[in-house]
Amino acid sequence: MRDTITLADDADLAHLVDLIDMLPSPDETDFWGEEPLAIGKKFAFRLRAVLTGRAYPKDVDYLAVYVLKYLGRGNGYITEEQITKSLRGAHGIPAAGYAWVEDATRTAWTLATRYSLPNWRGPRSAPGQAWLQD
Image (cartoon, rainbow, N blue to C red; front, top):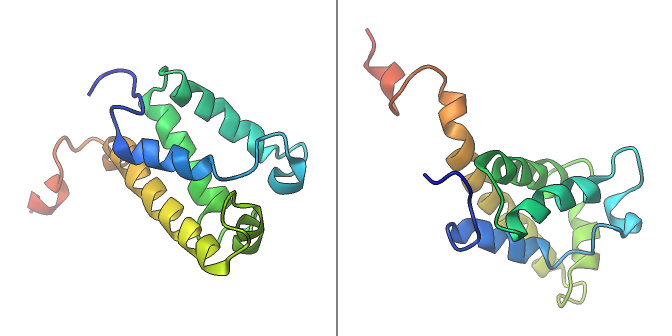
């Protein structure tokens, strides 16, 4: 894997950015919240690296985890209803908000496991290695 990751390198990352682009801009505090949490600023920092072609695996991982934590199914920060009302082009259609949350959650989980799994696996060098030990 190359050091940096671009949108052209990872179709899932490009898709997640497209989904995030349907949301309000990061300075819209009615959606993203105010300081000290500043969720929009966290997203903007990682998105800037991705959009300028300077993202490292940790940037993609953080972005994916932010989606899971702040926008994903069942999160305690930005509700599905808030997302539904704020989606560009969806006109408040509940099914669109539901589909957005499901798609973003699934895509973010795919990216988080892709870029974090080697760290989560720990000292084992190969997938499934723990299952081969007696």
